[in-house]
Image (cartoon, rainbow, N blue to C red):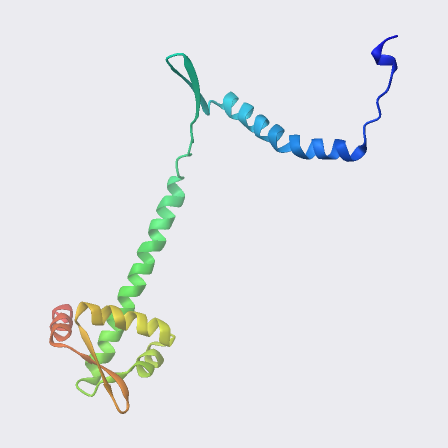
Length: 154
């Protein structure tokens, strides 16, 4: 008698486990074949051995997106510079009285966090100094800040 005439019962749980084990391997194999057809695999022979290397092909960025991103960055830079200039104008108008952070934020119509960030940049550049007193931390224009404002006003 032939072996084909006999049926061998295979439990369902065994089929499920075998499928779960083989499925990731089959997916990887299909992806590998697809990359090979697309030219993403390169065969290199090193002596007696053959090595397959995967080439990562990155598409060139779209020039329109690149220029749009640059334009957005330039616009953000312009806004930041304008914000710094507005703070300097407020400090010049107040003179030697000093200005509280809340006053600056209110006059500019921005949040305290944005005003603090801009003020930190001006302090780092040496254009503004902060002095803590009983009434709070006041910000004063330094001599370098005054000179900068005079140069820009001309």
